[in-house]
Length: 322
Ligand SMILES: Cc1cc2nc3c(=O)[nH]c(=O)nc-3n(C[C@H](O)[C@H](O)[C@H](O)COP(=O)(O)O)c2cc1C
Image (cartoon, rainbow, N blue to C red; front, side, top):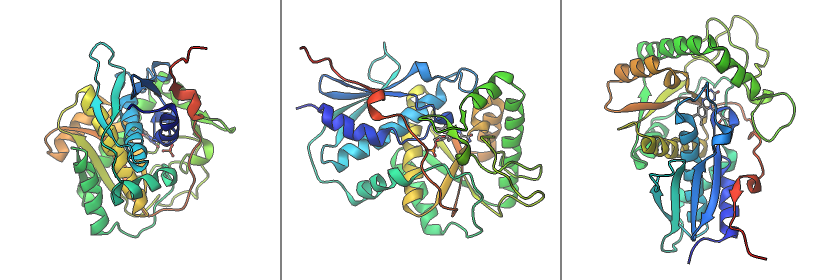
């Protein structure tokens, strides 16, 4: 027995809650021969910001993780094949029904966090992230065969921040990159793009980490943004297209684990998008493999989820003969 349209529609509604670059939602979900397939939607590409498709594969990997959770919680877990068709590299995964079973407590709590997760770009409070939560975040990455390096100590954080700021400057000098960012900023209600209210406060010259400018809320000048965020780098052993889908799944698992622990997080991908910065980051971490995402994590102000397109807009369903 394969998956049904009903199962796809229900799980798809969770899948689309995944994060994506500029909230482009670059995914499609289809039902084929009883399996659910997740594919990159090339019509939602960002040629200047994401010329290699890395970001789209991360987003599809994150959506795939939500899909896996939703199916497992519904009692119909999936076996997953990543990038199953060499001739069709846009298909990032195919899910087929596994033996039905009850969901684990971890699956249930991570699934419960899907609707509560959002990118929290506001300053975090000074409270440090406790050791137990740090450990859980690392475990979340390891469970998806990735690593999470917590950047500890002022000089290590400063070194990473310097790399991120210089990558940010490089990107902001590219008019095509800036045009894409502006194009996906939303001042009116919309089903995609980054709403002005979700953008962080405006940046100041003394800021440690570069925030991508989405709308920029007013902020008292001259003050530090936040005292000491926890900065983490997610990485994979390799950097093939498949590794990037794996990284997307791990990213979502880390973000949901953070949400479940009452923590906020936001993503900073400028140092990943600029090849020289990514290499500098890799060398500074001294880890085997490739950095795939930088994030800041901490206790923050409440916020709300950003909009998504209705699930039916991203489904390709089999045509039923009349
Ligand atoms: C690959 C990737 C890169 C991202 N890079 C950044 C970034 O550099 N700065 C940022 O503020 N948000 C970044 N985001 C977060 C998206 O803007 C965010 O997920 C999207 O707007 C949807 O909002 P939500 O996370 O609140 O659901 C990134 C997300 C992904 C998947």
